[in-house]
Image (tube, rainbow, N blue to C red; front, side, top):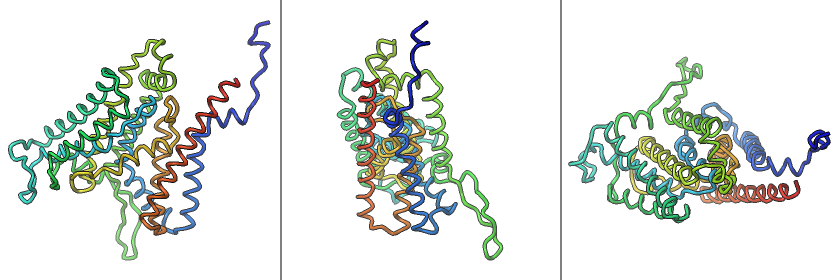
Length: 358
């Protein structure tokens, strides 16, 4: 009789289950608890208009978070995402003709809209390529390399606008960043006039990025390699995976996602200026980590990031509905991120202990 036939089936273990699923379960329960709380605290919180408003507010962050998910899955980090988004958004505005009252010295470099977009995307790709080269060729740790790239991108932004604010962008960017894709009918108002809720193109673009990001991670060899590199880099190398290529490529993907978010963001906000995206760094990292993707790599995914985005969106919107002091709101967001980090690290410790027992 073989060993497989004589071996007893492994019984259910609550500790093993918690070690495997804690980082996935905690964000879902947190989201449900927050929705229930704010639903009772504010009568307008659960309205369709407000739900769509939450999604609309998350759309730019969501695009950045897709690229950052890929990076964190490989057990790396990118601190330059917000700065790159800002620099690329300013770049596409810089190459676009501005009104006379905007004092930006770009008269000799203005381009047709399509070329301005291509140049801005090329800038995002270049930021990612430099980061990838510094990490994989020179061997600079991602924390230090992306910190340096954050300063470089901020410097590019400052040099291009020099404290000014740009208001014009290519038509395609204006449409995707501030335009309406379609409208959802809500019925008639008291005067008998039809009411609609607009669905912006930023929501559609964000959903496409999330979907494509999920499909690549789940159903492609490249996605499996990302998990392998994040889970056990040495084992991935022995399996024939080009680890340096995977790490470099996810840094480029992250930069391009940030750049596209930056281009759409300047149109969404209605202006391009220095330090416009500063808060997006913490928001994007928080979305990935709060959702349950492991900071140690190899575990998580776009599904987790979606949950994390919703948690942040519900917190921000819900606190506004109950009129919490803006300074206290910052504190609460920080506490939520701290709790997510504790759960993330604790789940990793549980996983390692359970692996030793098994």
